[in-house]
Image (cartoon, rainbow, N blue to C red; front, top):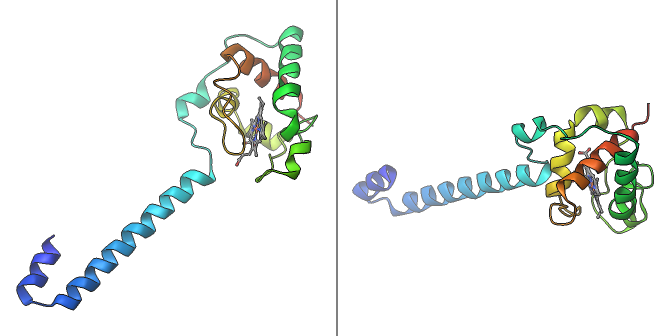
Length: 148
Ligand code: HEC
């Protein structure tokens, strides 16, 4: 605004228009950067990462998690979680290998739970499909997929 006033007072119309274009270009540029950042990575709140399962893993929990995984996740994440399910022929990006020590150590239980809850294209959200207990069963099962 201050800039506009100065240019009006000296009557430099073209300069004013150029200035406006620069301001607009900067704004659009910044806005698209912000959008790109949000689309690229997961946006996981710190408190969501710290959430812990309300129950411990046991055979029953893991068996239940395995069944839910086979039904809801295997087509993309693959039989053993390597990201090689049959649906990967049609989706982009393909899921990462979640069996590696890197992936398993990078994500807390709370982070896995949050990712399953909210999803990220092409992965759907599971908040409306699986109950909280079911999602925790799946998290406990995912831990059994750790390779090495
Ligand atoms: C339609 C295919 C699809 C289905 C079904 C699906 N996912 Fe995913 N999932 C993905 C893709 C693709 C990504 C990677 C998204 C990204 O980072 O851009 C992903 C990411 C993840 C991640 C994060 C991995 C990481 O290293 O950050 C977890 C955990 C996960 N999925 C678990 C599950 C579970 C559990 C289910 C079933 C309840 C499931 N997904 C169902 C496609 C799918």
